[in-house]
Amino acid sequence: MAIPGDVALRQANYVKPSATIKARHPEVSPSEDEVKELAGLLKQGKAVTILGGAGCAGAHSELMQLAGKLKSPIVSALRGREHIQYDNPYDVGLTGLIGFSCGYHAILEADTLLMLGTDFPYTQFYPEQATIIQVDRRGENLGRRTRLDLGIIGDVRATLGALLPLLEDKRDDKHLKRFVHHYQETRKGLDELAVGHPGHKPMHPQYVAKTADDLAADDAIFACDVGTPTIWAARYLTMNGKRRLLGLFNHGSMANAMPQAIGAQLTFPGRQVVTFSGDGGLSMLMGDLLSLHQHKLPVKTIVFSNSALAFVELEMKAAGILGEGTELVNPDFVGVARSAGMFGVRVEDPGDLPEAMAEAFRHDGPALVDAVVNRTELSMPPTIKLDQAVGFNLWALKAVLNGRGDEVIDLAVSNIIR
Image 1: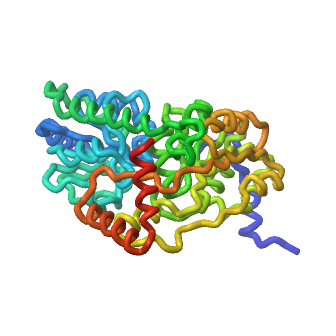
Image 2 (image 1 turned 180 degrees about the vertical axis):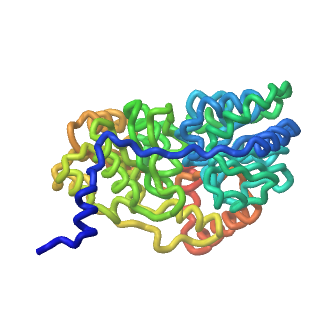
């Protein structure tokens, strides 16, 4: 059959793309006038806080220089954490629902907030009175979450490169020192929660996360399910500029960790890939364990097994609602893993965790660690509002009156007696 002339012409002129061709991303730079206006606002600020997101990738050096000149604490959005928090003397942690009080107050008490490459969605965590500036290469993000005094379309690195020569070092560092010290104390308190005493069951999930962090490779790629696994990943995984943290941070869809890990391991076969999987998330897509075996992907799956949709339960408690429909009847995860040709081990005693996890990480192939953790572990937001406190007290009262007072006792014992 004859090929139409136009088709034949296209085929004759077609050149197969070379494997060496790299994707190129144009750099977006603001105008000179915009940079001058930005510099002017920052010079006026007496207490400047920076909120950085994923758009800060590749701009670590410029960001550190800026914070040094402005004497600014740097708060990270979750997706920006891997690009910001390493080698960072200005770090004050996260804000938002899974953040810290130091990050929350560093933003709330600033007179100037500089948002860099972030579309941080929680409007209740923005200041009401401060001067707010947003820099983002995506113009549709400007002003989407909060009012702005200045919005600039531009890459973070390009914008800061043009901005830095216009700024002089500020002398007053009280705002910076206050919140850096606050974060250091908060970090110390969080590390004290990540303990495991042999025979003390169930394990604290913080201890499981910290153990994985200590054992994982320097360039490991982590994928975390939504809910409490995201909390423990955000608080206990050390970012060093080489590690990656994947998750569904824009959407609350469950069961993302395993498919993300499969994609990461196929893309980077020489790197260690680790999941922080909830038992609910793993159960939803448990068939992916077969994919690990089928494709010989050495993903290490850490299951935070608490037989519950724990984050949903916590939200219900804060709203004063007695939990229903959140309990999980889990299968034998280790049995399923072994039937799929994987290494599998179940850990209930904290004393057994380090060696079990080390063995899983050493295993030449896919491995699963079923870590039985405390169901009633509290993960507190950076600030407790009145309605949350009232809701929590209401839940406790309802639990007692409905014959579920043991839940209140278990909650207190789990989080006060460690």
